Every structure is written in structure tokens, then in C-alpha cells.
Image 1 (cartoon, rainbow, N blue to C red):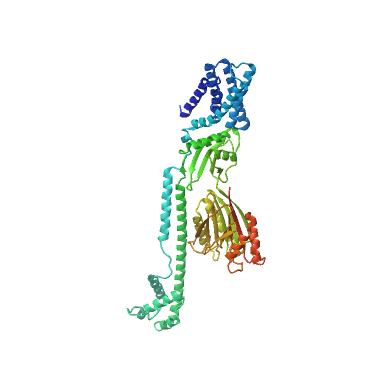
Image 2: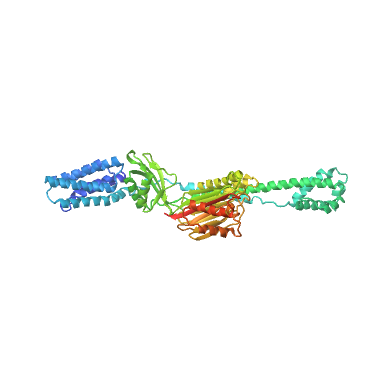
Length: 613
């Protein structure tokens, strides 16, 4: 017999023994213990049998009639509530138990079958029964659930799988280092390459010349030095110097033919060097992607800290409150994330074929956890009779609202600027603005690709730095000339209020706090130019009511003032409004006053406000 059945037998024994406890001639523990056990969903038939058997052994006939009817009425009423409401809350059960006891007391007084006491004693007894049920039910539930944590714990990734992921991460990291160290970029030709070019030229031209033996077979022939100077001049200037050509004609019968052939050979060698360097750039890109894969594997190998066993009592309270709302919990697991936040995973279903709103379950979880818990994004809204896995996490301290104002360049069909407002798991709100070089459809497609790649990488779980680097790698490998885009990103931690800024070739970003405005500037090249992106990062602690404002280059470049950043700060400070959408529009209207109502370039303003919940 397992531990749970032994505990049920103990509860049956308590129900039986409740008939031995008398208080001022009353036996309130009989309906109290029975109702609490009934709410914990112990077999009602056996409960009724043991209760009646105990009353038959220890109570007089009049008391047995009263309390026997009380427990019977309680059992029927609780089952009716469960049938109608699909669940029975503890407070409802306490009211039913107390009311049934009071009703039977009044009936006994009216029928004069009670041997002692009075009506006021019955009222006190019913209050005692209700209070006992409220206090005893969660304790009894915790007692029944104690020791069941191992059965309720969901299997987590085996330790050896984490070790294997770490091994894979090390392997990918080693491949990345190998690609990086394999070779280095070449800016000039080595001596042996110069020698091979000389041999190629002489093999094509000099071998058919009658004076070949005179020019090359003598050890002190000046042709070796002349060829070296000729090729060095081509490497430096692209063409041999005129004085070098005149000097070369003094030693060679066919100087023009030699020079033309040398130019052809040198151009092919330079083309080969360009392709070689391009291959090295692709190797660097691959190395960066391997690094990113290694990071993701290491991150997957770092399991959340499993604190289910340590928080057994807390989770028992959660299961108890979920059961009150009609949920049948099969598995429960509590994690502590790397940032210290709690994450609760449940596998549950609705009892009696009903449906339960997830928002009601979230309230039950919050009550049990003693902190506000919310379902993760894209969770189901209803839980039915089929088992469902739900994940709840701590509610962030802050929330954000966004607004945007944008105008395409005069004469352009679409704007070359693209933006994104992204809510990530873990309480991150990410705002991204990309300005494609130029304007029109081509610039729009370029910046749209940048935004889409960043969104995909961030949603997959990459860090912001890694996502930007991976996106830059993809843009470099695309290899389309003249297509570059800026990246301006603000990532707000909604738990702490810390905002991190990542800028690549982007215009200044502004932070508005009341009448004070702070600017964040950076100087770097756009993405897609070099394999290794120059990423500038800074952070600011935001407070309740702050605004983060991102603008494209079209805003700052055409203010037509000596110091556009200071002017923009004054414009932002002059607008006093708490609506991000209206703030962005008013700022755009103020900027158009400086440009005479025209849009000489694509103009975009993003505004995000942060408030405490």
C-alpha cells in the first residue's frame, strides 16, 4: 500500500474519532473534519460511512440524528455546487458545513429532540465549524500532498544531455577559432608570388626570344632587378613609371610586349588576391556564426535552477488553490531563471469536463505564490478536460506603450525606414529602427531585411549583440554593393527599468524625463560593410514616466541648425504630453517647421513610454 492510501486511512480514522470530541455538549469536529476531508476530495462514500459508524459508536441517538443529517446535507450540497460551478471553493464549503449544522440545530430545537443547549450555542457551533473548515482544509491538503512532489515533478533534461551540449559548444567554438586562425588578409604580394609572376612572364615572352640566354643565364644579369622593380611599381601605382619603362628598354628588345604581359599577369594576380580576401571574409562570417551557435548551446545547457523540492510547501498552496478552481494538477515544477525570476510550469486539466479560464488560474497561482504571476505570451486562454501545459512567470514591474510618426521622402512611394516593437519572453521590450541607405523601394527592402533578421534572432533566443552580429554577417554575405543600413536599438528590461542602447551608424537617441532631455550619440559605420560590426553600447536606468525617442537620419540631417542635437532636445522638452503616439506626431510637426513642411529624406520618429504597473 502506498503512502497516499495510508494517509487516506488516517483521515478516515480522524473522521471516526471526531465523534469522541465533545465541546460544551456539542460535537463540532464531526461536520468540521467531514467537510474539510470532502473538500480535499477524499472518497465521500467512505467518509460518510466512517463518520456514521463513529457516531453510532459514541453518540446518543438524538445527537447522531442531528450530526448524521448535517454531514449528509453537507455532502449533497457540496456535490451540487461542484456539479453547477465545476468546483467548490473552501469558503463555500465552510459556509455549507456551518449552515448545515445550524439548520439541523434549529430543527432539533423545534422538534425538541435535542437534550441540552440552546439556539445561541448552535450559532456558535456553526461558526466554529466554518472557521475549522477554513483553517483545516489547506492543512489537510498539504498533509495529503506531502511526499508527492517526486510524483508531480516533471522530468527535466538529463545531466548527460547538458554535458553533451557543452561538448558541442566547445566543438563549435574550436571550429570558430580554427577558421579565424586559418589565414590572414593579404594587402600585398609575397616575394614568392612575385617570383611566380616573373616566371610566368618569361615563360610566355622571353623563351621565344633569341637573346633569352644572354638576359637570364648570366648570374649578374640586371634583368632580375629590373623585373622586381617593374612588378613593385605595378603593385604600388598600377602602372610602371615612365622612367622605369625607358630604363627597361635599354636591357630588353621587346619592352612594350613585356610590360603589357606583366600588366595582364599582375591584374589576374590582384583579382586572385581579391577573391582570396573575400574568402577570408566569408570565413570570418562563418566563424562568427559558429560562435553564436556555441553560445546558444551553452545557454541551453545551463538549466534553470530547479527549486521544486525546496519550495514544496509553497507549491502545495498553489495546487490547493488550483484545485479549488476546478483544476486537476498532474505535474508542477518551479524554476529560478538566471536573472533570479521565478517560472512555474504546470500540467493540468479541468475536472468534470468543464473549461477554466487561464486568467482565473493565474489568479490562483498568484495567491499561492504570494506574488503576481502571469501566463507567458501565446498561452492558451482556456483549459479543458485534456491535459495542458501552462507556464507562468513573474509579472514585470513596468509596462511600455509605443507611438510612431513617419513620412517618406518627397516623391518616394515608400519610406526607406523600417521599425519594430518587440516583446520578448523574460520581460524585455525591444525597439528597433533601421534606416536603409537612400530612399524608395530598394532602401525599404534593405532596412526591412535588417529588422526581420534581428527579430528572428531575438525571438530564437540570441543575445542582442549576437543577433546584430549574425544579421551583419548575413548582410555581408549578401554582397550587394551600396546597400547598407543603420541599426538603432533600445532594449528595456521591464523588471528593473534598465534600458540598453545599441547603435550602428544611427542618429542620436533621446530620453525625456519631465522637462529634462538626455541624448545618446554614437559614431560608427552602418551594417553590411565589414564582417566585424563596430557595435556601440550604453545603458540608462529609466524611471516611471520616462520616454525613449528614436529618430532616423532624415530628422537630424535637415534641421538646418548649427547644433541639431541641442535643437532636437529643446523641441522634445517643449512637448508636454503623456501619450507616446501623440508625442511622436507632435515632434514630427515641430521638425517639419524647420524643413518648411517638406521631407527631403525619409523621416521616422519612434516614442516609447515606460510606467510602473
